[in-house]
Image (cartoon, rainbow, N blue to C red; front, side):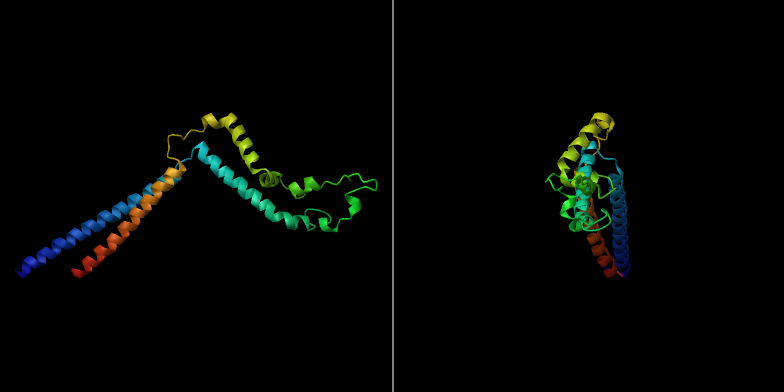
Length: 181
């Protein structure tokens, strides 16, 4: 084989590798665009309800996490609960004193009661909200023709796996290109 033929073969291989590399780069751009598109699509009412459920759970956990310090501090109450005398809870005749303990616990002395309701009755809060929203706007929500969040997650996982595969193949091509230098 002549030197000119060998040089021509190397040029052709380099050009082929460059075309493959460019095609992979285009595909990586398509993958990135598809992931952005999938993440930007609106969600269905059922998917929204799952996010509502997660928010209710977070609100309840947050409220429960603040409960001990709220009870034992002066922030929510004029006197921390562990410093209040028995006489404020019960009258001499044994009857319950008019002390707004429950209201103050649920609202921490002025906040919305939603966190307390989420902590104490998360399933019921979710069910009632979903029922009321369904009654008022569920039929107008739409988006049922779009992929569910679960389907999108699966598609994105496949796309990310393909993207990683392209990165590995690109590294191999770079090595082949270096070997032809």
